[in-house]
Image (cartoon, rainbow, N blue to C red):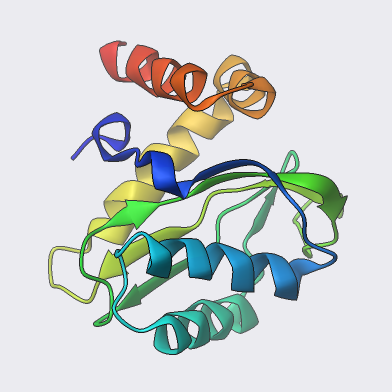
Length: 152
């Protein structure tokens, strides 16, 4: 499973307008539902919110990675969302978030969400990858960034 192969254009937004973390999570969960990645919007939203209550998913450097492993998830998927304006997320570095990568994983024994989180964490530690991703102006640039990472 390579993240580059999982990019779905319907799950990319380069200017999501959200006033706060709650609204951002709702809108991004709606993207997952509308793309057919989850079968029940409310169940998925509740799962993401429950996970967020356990530990805020703002990792620092302006990026949050909320996630949910749930039986309502049909296919492992992730969003790439640039926020129109930075919002408070409870990030590790206490800085606002302007980029959200939300993961959705089926409730299966293969723990695909851990594999996705691991790949993302390694990639996002690379300053060039992270900044290129945040600066991307369109979906094709994002795909190229992930493809380049895959080829390394």
